[in-house]
Image (tube, rainbow, N blue to C red; front, side, top):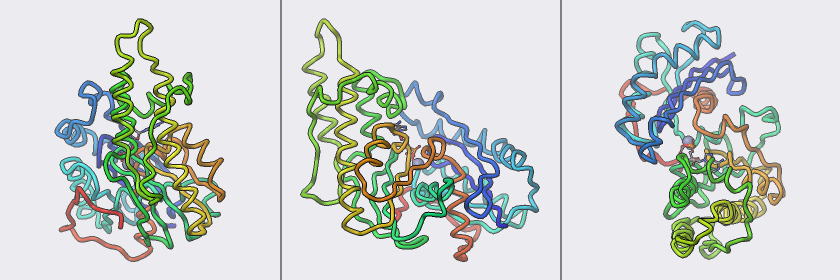
Length: 333
Ligand code: KG4
Ligand code: ZN
């Protein structure tokens, strides 16, 4: 059995986890900084790296204790080296390097976007995963549609040309006066709203596999301006539901089309926005192949996905030296 310690500090979650054979979570600890950043309405980079410095070692210790393992039981340390905030990434990578050196463990640098896809291998029905697979990664910083032809082998089909899907949720939430982080707040508000109340634009971009959400955000802003000052107040639930519907419509339509065009065996939906209730329901309904969406706690940032990805990288022979550097804009393909 191969046991890998995963470490994740790319944004505002400090996380450590131990995973066996890329499939079985022995422990997974996530410390969210959401409360620290809420007052700024977004992630404040300096605050994030300071908080990572304070929590990373206790979190790693907790993950080892929860897995009932000693350092000798580990086979490698896997850590996110990008993409993400440079100061935050450095905290995780330096902690991993310290462990690799001090405990004589192989060091494996991981791409955060690739790791989001590997959260699917932590699901109960993961034996069914066979290539080629489609991957939709929708997070706060990224929106990517990729074809996965084998472990570690990707072809980029498209991605956002402006705002990421999660970023659009966060910005629109702010316009609607909802709390940070915006995705869960819109998801919640939309439940009491009418998705047909407002017809917001969809950017189809000539039927490519690219996405654009900035026009949608502007349309919501104009609508909010128009409605402002109404005696009844802003119809937040209807606006949230109509906005969410527009995002989900484009994400699902393009994913369904790609699933057919590339004749994939299934589609993995990953990243923070895959926690969205409307997206989960619609994509299961409209994509004609099996859809793999990890449970909520594996959709948002965590270290179990880093360790799961690390297992496949370990099997493929990847070993990084102590000179390994962070890369804030590391692409998936
Ligand atoms: O993957 P993630 O945890 O961090 C990044 O790598 O960016 O994604 C965070 C993003 C945020 O923009 C957040 O608003 C969004 O995921 N998000 C959601 C939901 N939960 C989190 N968006 C829509 N609906 C949700 N339920
Ligand atoms: Zn993420």
